[in-house]
Length: 295
Ligand SMILES: NC(=O)c1ccc[n+]([C@@H]2O[C@H](COP(=O)([O-])OP(=O)(O)OC[C@H]3O[C@@H](n4cnc5c(N)ncnc54)[C@H](OP(=O)(O)O)[C@@H]3O)[C@@H](O)[C@H]2O)c1
Image (cartoon, rainbow, N blue to C red; front, side, top):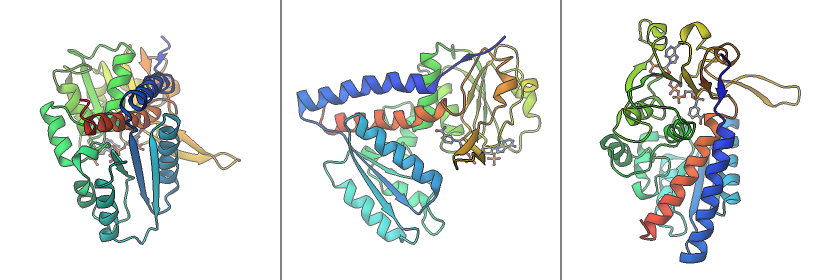
């Protein structure tokens, strides 16, 4: 069996077309222009490229977009003051502080300072709590993107054995929680593996759906999956450079071997990555509609 490729690029394109229409309608019918600010502290090249991609995508959709780039020495107080300024800026509906922050800044304190109504990354404890309870909130972008990929690719999750590799606050834990819930792309039986898991392959071999988010290149190999599994590869690992200085990326899944055994698989790049940015745009449009009293 050669797996069907679940293309994040294609799915994200379709969602962006829907969003562009929604943004056009908001502007024409309600005089509402969604606004997003991205705040980057320091010069990490990966973070810089993520922020640039977010700003570019926002602009392409007609979202008002501002980008704040701060030196690595920026103090916590200075950053908190900037977040507060955007909390009070009516042109801005979504505030994204690019993580990771330099070590001298308390990440939790900064995320907590964002107005939960503008927390389009879905990391504020209020939104995390609402998500846990299954209430309306901003869903964190990567798990949200995974749900959309599963749903739009027609993957049955109800009653499925789902094995998630990784327990981070931004991917593993929230996707586990969401897939457990009584909701679309949910109702699964969920297992989470991490570095203390005794026999990871024991779990992955019985999984109908595997979601790999560990940050270890090509860790999931064909012998670890059952025939016909659906494999979602969240990992983005830089494993080298091309002669033109472009990063060579690998996922957490050994794509070449696993695609011969899986029913469906997401590639890296072109899988979960484009969905994450798109879900940020979706959350920003949702924030603008909420602020305008339209939902
Ligand atoms: N495509 C996207 O949009 C997107 C978004 C976010 C992240 N990512 C990528 O997804 C990957 C994971 O990101 P993250 O932020 O969730 O990472 P993270 O915070 O570093 O968490 C990694 C998790 O994987 C577990 N783990 C690491 N090595 C393992 C091993 N050998 N065996 C079993 N478990 C292991 C860790 O276990 P412990 O808890 O026991 O340490 C931890 O729970 C990275 O490659 C990242 O770049 C992609």
